[in-house]
Image (cartoon, rainbow, N blue to C red; front, side, top):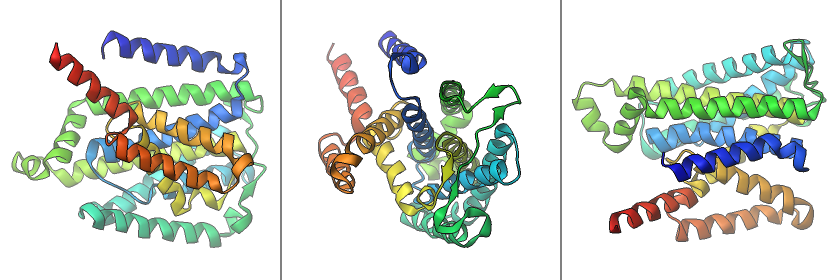
Length: 312
């Protein structure tokens, strides 16, 4: 990263650290961070591996339910509840991956969508999920028996720390030899096979990592908002995370974060003013972005910088 990018990240980090102190509503920023983590997890699969999943809401929503049930009904501590949600998402990712990973393109996407709908109906019918009412009043408890997460500011800095750790983890994964193989699979899978790489194993591992991070985002969202509902596991949630990634820029590190910020920000600002029309407005913005910014906002900025440097 050049100096400009580093200073940008540093500025954003400082802004995130002082956000509760300058009047930003902590719960809103925490929700944004959860969905930004969800979008980064999805981008790891689509942007750096080339696999388009229409079923990522299954990992996000199922982990949210698992965490909420263990914390509320079983009295587990928040860290154990989050761990249970991540493990459940990873196991679900293994099942999805084993079934779908040998397919490509639209067939892979449709299989993940079908499996996700099965999880949706499971959450609708299972007794521990609360059916259409969902899980309400999930307590935050104390992290490791010390940090009172009921305090919004304490909860905020915990979520921020988790997000930064996961963001840096994704950055490390993508820039590692494993990440380079994933990029090669995305660009030319037959070439990767001819070089002796077990492509299906790499794709399965990337799928499970993405599912686990999506589950972590869903678990944190349950603790932040204190509820888990069917909307978390509905197919429209998969559509939202795709929108976030494409809007910000697929295959970029900060693009999904920016995309999540735009979508969640618009939903928060416009929901009480235009009601259900907020979906239409976000859709129009997405269409305009696709027409004007084919690579997403961050992707187009990076392409413009490369063109400018080439002219020098």
